[in-house]
Image (cartoon, rainbow, N blue to C red; front, side, top):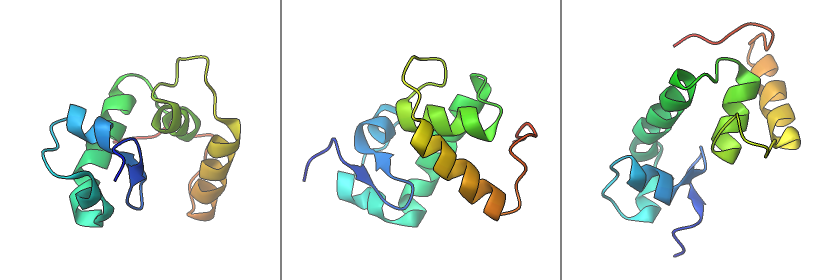
Length: 96
């Protein structure tokens, strides 16, 4: 299995989880309970680096940083649509 793949419902990259201390095998990230701490860790990291809106957080999640030149517009639009459907207001800053 390729380690460059993303795993689980949050599409966690194995190398990102491993960089943050994950010691398991890549396929273990398929499990929601296993990947959730790594998701929270990365989202918190990006939030603390300044990704304070759903748009910037989605950008950072998909491209690695919300401050780089790589803006995944289609992905961000999908996240914003899902966020709105869940009752979120994309005009408001996020809170931890």
